Length: 173
Image (cartoon, rainbow, N blue to C red; front, side, top):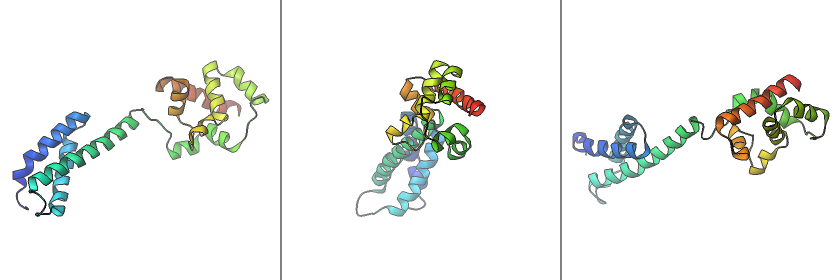
């Protein structure tokens, strides 16, 4: 099998092209992954089971599809479909740290001040955050995605509401 790469390069490129097109991903990335799969197939091929071209085709189909699904999921996360603060950012956010460390009565003076200083939507998000409603979904920390889902708003508006709460907390807590 070794030394016959040229014989299989078109098969690799064809499957990579179709996969990249199907998932709207970068072809060069898929092609590189296809070459890697070829090398793995060389090492794991069993001559008694099937022809190498059949084995390679099956490996390419399955592994490139798996790779494409993982890549697409990562890309969606980066594009803001799922937006969470990373651990370092979370550790530095005074709003979240304070919300975690204290138990608030929603009738106290500070809460009434929040109601006066924040607009109505921001105040609802504020209540959501300090009321730990996000924990009902077994979340470790609240996220902008939680705000998007709870209040049925887009990411940009959820970020504005989140930042309004953060700024209030920094200025008045």
